[in-house]
Image 1 (tube, rainbow, N blue to C red):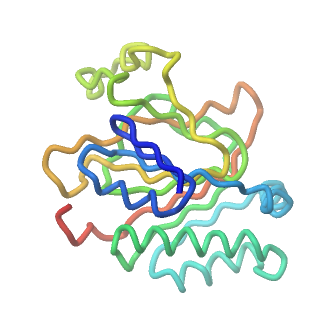
Image 2 (image 1 turned 90 degrees about the horizontal axis):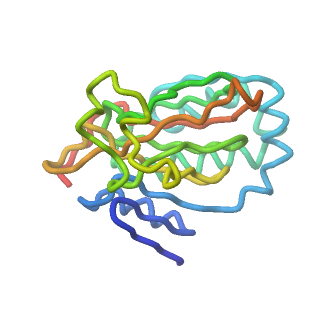
Length: 212
């Protein structure tokens, strides 16, 4: 497995890298992968304009996904979603999850921010990926103020962007460990470009049951 750990992030080409989110100094873990085998199915779902919001255990979520994305018509995508749910459950240890699968064509979060959760998984199946900041490129003193991105970001040239298809685990502000810092990130802008994203978001539906 190729692995890179730099400052506050861990990056690799195996899902094993996602376990690194529990390391104190890491607040984003990135699993880079080739998703070209999903392209045809992803494009079809993107054109359908689906929005799926579900909560519960994995089997119940997958049953709900199948109501919008028929597994026989989208076997590779539904299997991939199942695999990501299983990875998320393995890393977090929770049994109840929340899933959002949505076609996005608006600017969700323009401002760099942290999330008020413990751990979140993101995968942009199509379109531009999530933007995030290395720890030494963020001014945390102004995050709680109305200041804009030009005050939060120290060097715009060092803003990082996840690749399409990559799987991210993001540490949030209520991660159960003292002394950790949530990842500072934002959504890419879409309205100016007219692009669309197919976004998968998975959250815990219960607080993590361990102290990392």
